[in-house]
Length: 273
View 1 (cartoon, helix red, strand yellow):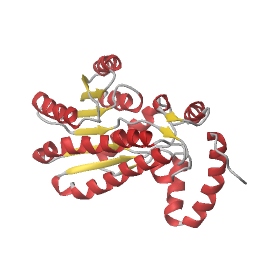
View 2 (cartoon, rainbow, N blue to C red; view 1 turned 60 degrees about the horizontal axis):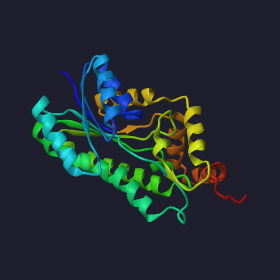
View 3 (cartoon, helix red, strand yellow; view 1 turned 90 degrees about the vertical axis):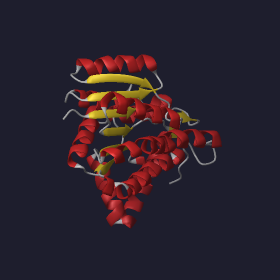
């Protein structure tokens, strides 16, 4: 059966990689994005890769956008199988310096954007008796590095929502996957808000050094949907650190403190020995 997939933030980065990965399987892929030029380009790439591409303008800050897209895709395709809540932004800064406006901005997109995606498509999934939500969180929501307060909180919120919905919707035939990558090669830093000097350049360096690509993460996501697995943790080192945090919290705290000092120095923070 041909998969029917909707991806927010699908015109670039990880969203684009997921779209093209599903296109290789001949899927019908709708990408929602605020950038119409990039969206039209990726729509053509989906078609060229063997899928059926469809771009719609979508701002995840508006529930009505997502509700209209659900209605549109239901009329066009007869339903939707996979909704990838991928659209997100980044921020960095201390608790003193991050403005309340930046807190509200990132929570509105990273947390409430996912909430709106789940809220808009859950009724259709229930009618179908099936469907999968793929919610893009981050290792930042599990590891909680300093100087990333608002970003960490936003991604921890996505994890909490995903765990909740996994239990809440399971009896309706609805699966949830929660994706928590660490640094990988993407364009997330382009939208970053921060007052820390040089932070975008430092984050971009960390992304470029990663041997994990957006295509690797997309492959793991497609596998998780097929296998109906909840956690998608593509990075081996960070996955081990997360397991250490769960099973040996004191050892994790000591290692995290050492890592945090190095991280704060890179990010422009003042860390004392």
